[in-house]
Each structure stands twice: as structure tokens, then as C-alpha cells.
Length: 235
Image (cartoon, rainbow, N blue to C red; front, side, top):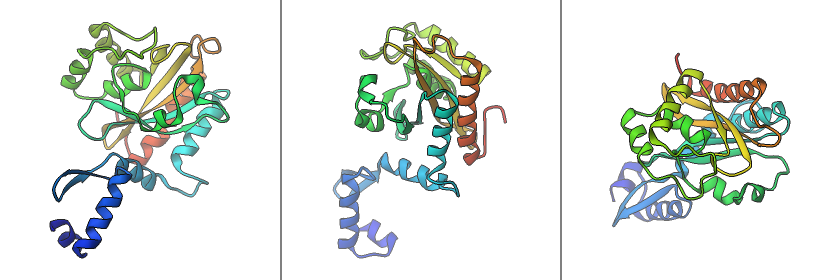
């Protein structure tokens, strides 16, 4: 087995490690004796990189600060889906005692389901920094059935919104992903490339329009996480 030889371990040990890793999606079996890295590896790598001298990880610290600065807003960290799809996954969150069922989703959905970049402030924020051919492909894709009433349905309008996001450094969403919730998102940039986005959610009745201090707090959280990778849009 080539993997065992490269790792300098016996075949049986390598097989046990690979089998165990497939259960947690660290590895994905693609054929007899053939594996590729799974999406869980990105999660492990990010948390390994973000550990610092603070209590807990840098992600938790940044999201909790965002929540405190926005009067108990719901704070999420989305990462760009790591393998070949134009999507995003929720990697971490700070929601306090909130019941995520009020958002129309379970915690498992939020943490594990890859969501389209076609909808939502965080999706459009990530999409704004991807290559033009990817943007056009996503804009031509159908709007997910579960999208909220404020989703941008016209492809040209969606593409135009990406220009505004790059100019401003953030995105505003009005009931895009779900009815009753508005949002602010800002990009997390690593080594000059888009990695993900920080998202703030507030009920539309509480935040019909995002105040400047909420926008600033969201950008600040994203900037702190971008500093781990040493980059920020325009640098």
C-alpha cells in the first residue's frame, strides 16, 4: 500500500486509520485502496491554525465579540466549501441560548450542510471574491427552493451586487435565506484568496436596516480572522 509506505507504517495500521477517518469524513474512499481528503480536514486545520493564548479558539473569541457588540446578534463563521463545489459550510457560531429551530434549521444542518452561494449575505460575500467564471455559473443556477422572500432572483442583479460587496467590503441581506431575518456579512481572506465569511443575523423587526456599528463590528470580526492568514481585500 503506497499510503502505508509513505507514512512508514504497516499496511494494517494504515488501513485502520483510513477506515476510522472515513467515519468522520477526514478521508473519503474513492476506490479500492484509494482515498482523498474529506471536508472535515479543513475544519481540523482551521482550528489548529487559530489556537492562540486566548481561552478557546480565535474563531470563538471573534464571534463572541461580534455577538456582544451587536446586542446579542447571532454570529456565524462560514467557510468556502473546500472540494470543487460553489458552496459554503458553517464552521462555528455564537448564538448564546438561542434555539436554532427558530431559524428553521437544526444545529446539525448549520454545521454540516453545504449551502449554495446563490443566496444570503455570506454566500454572496464569498462569491464576490471568486473568479468571474464561477460567479456567472452560480448566477445562472436556480434559486434554492428554501430561499427567503428577499433572495435576489435575477442573475444580472446578483452579479451587480458582487461589485458593491467588493467596493464596500461587506454585504447586507434582507430576508435572503429565511423569512424574518436580516444579515450583515464580511469576507475572511487568507493569502490573498477568499476563505469564508463572518455572518451576523438579527430579526428584521429588530434590525430593519443594519446600523453602521453592526456593520463595523462584522467587518472587525472578519478582519481579525483574516489576520491569521495575513491578508485582507485590497492589501
